Length: 218
Image (cartoon, rainbow, N blue to C red; front, side, top):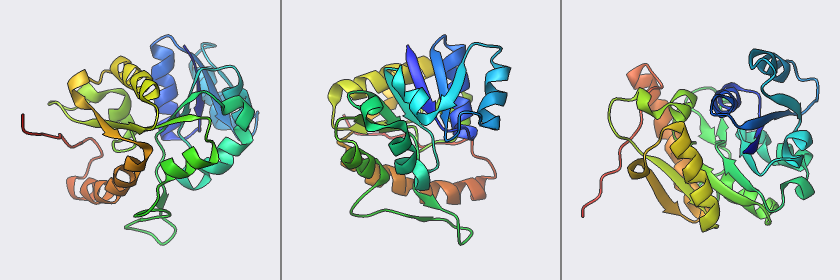
């Protein structure tokens, strides 16, 4: 599958590398075409992937992954271009965390809105699915790192888009029993808010390699 990964940070590199490993045709997008981090990543793939601008990554793909910093996600998607995004599935793994005042972080949007919803409103013809934002990058692409079953969520307004997201999660190693449909994109409010607790737990545990397991009756 042709997949564009927007973002050159730890999350973007982890996801893009896994996609290449799985045999997907991957383009990593950055603000500038000659981004050094993107170029270095492409070199490590030994020619199996490409890099370019956000628009380059969005043009010729069928699925996109937003792995940009939450505070810059809307701007990055604007640079990708609405015409390049329209009709495509966008997996939003970003979080609106604000570390400008140190620890613990705050959220730039919460309670009555979410970054996932803001992206969906800004790009109404894009099929936004909030997913993977509740775990560390290593766990995102290698869920079997953890010894027991654990939970990942998908939230979005388009059921087919959520199915496409779940299929990709399966490729990453997530089991069907671990993938929970949280409902519409409005569920991104809770999924993003969880990151405040996640950061706290990471400090308490001394490791980012953990996750929650949702258990329900029946």
